[in-house]
Length: 237
Figure 1 (cartoon, rainbow, N blue to C red):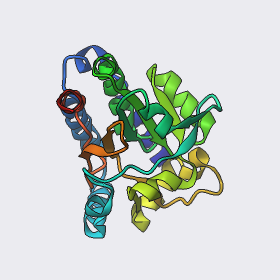
Figure 2 (cartoon, rainbow, N blue to C red; figure 1 turned 60 degrees about the vertical axis):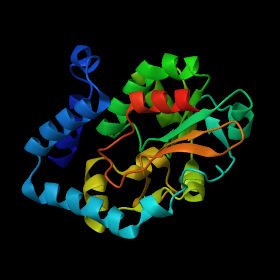
Figure 3 (cartoon, helix red, strand yellow; figure 1 turned 180 degrees about the vertical axis):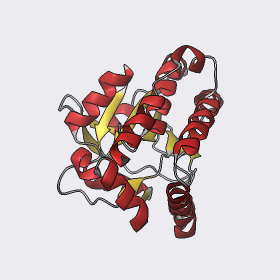
Figure 4 (cartoon, helix red, strand yellow; figure 1 turned 135 degrees about the vertical axis):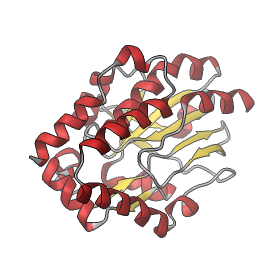
């Protein structure tokens, strides 16, 4: 039943596209949250809420890279097997750097689609969009194709870059158990990956000199950077 429930929730995130185009990302996320919460058992809801509180207690949001910090450079592989280097991209202008947990995450899929819709505005402001995921390249390619993404999606294998940015956190044992019953993170991230680690759904704007100029960091995986806020921040650079 757990796997069927997970697949049901994932499908919810891909419905009502016409309506979603007229809503903010926050509205879409809140609507999905309401549907998924209504469908969940009390024990499951309690487990996920405790998972969020655990991230808050761990202080990840405060210890992660912040505005004014220098963004660690990196080279990672995209879904086509090509290497992409942050510092090389920055030569052409600012970079919007965002993490998503994986194609299994309905909140991430809604976010990716919303970012894609705003991509022309990011580009008009002179910026490029770059998404990092712990998923293996084959899985990230599937996510890219599924969402019609026209920006780079890079595999951060074993969370190497998430660790450098300080965005990595540990799942509580109960949440890790629920995830394993539903889909098993190692199926997406590789056998060598730990099944209790995920990155925050963080978003940064990095200026040409490598300085972080804007940041969205939240302990709650259901909250994401609003694309219109990203556009406004880019225009303010």
